[in-house]
Image 1: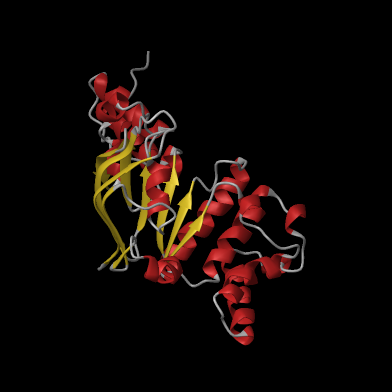
Image 2: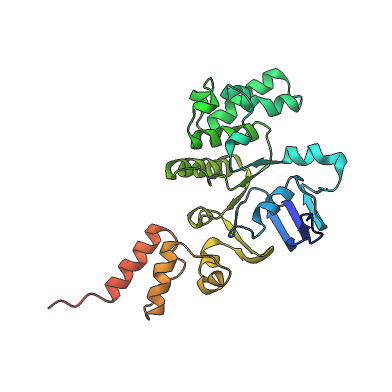
Length: 287
């Protein structure tokens, strides 16, 4: 597969009033393959949201380069092409919803792109169906739940027909039900429509559902690979202030106690099977 986003030695610092410019991104080199589902994990201040904003030229590098679909983001003349290729969804949907009716909000971006009215109608319907919000198309966005608002915001991006969607902490303000609904929507877009997904998160359970996991700390990439492989590196992740999913933590503690269990049994079902196998090998002693 070809890369939809590439960064090479990406460096970035925000301007500071006192003249001190702390480095936020420090030599990040990544390649995001088209059609993939990638999660970027890290604690607050690690640079993951700043990285996300470089992926559709909201921010431009202080050093190094970022290419979107082969286009250098520093090329002002191609900004529209970049943002057609990569759409952004942020953590607060209220900041992205601009209309008083759901379907009008979803139509906003295509209208600004000059899409013909008949095609806009089709795009809006398709986008709302994709996020399971078609039945709410005539509702007022402010009356929706947080999870529903976020799905409308995602629909607004889908209507632009981007090849990649970057979601920056999209579930941070949601309750567990809303988080589950939004994550299900993201996965469905990736698997059924082939949309490249880059999910910025600090939730371990969300990161575990991606195909690839990138871990950041202090503006650098410190781990990159399949979630099972990355989360197996328990002690390395602890050194950068991160925990691991509860399943991995339980199995790691069992291994520390001398039991032979796999660390890559990441899901609840896989962990339960590993524990069952352990019990079969070491049945409890009864009086």
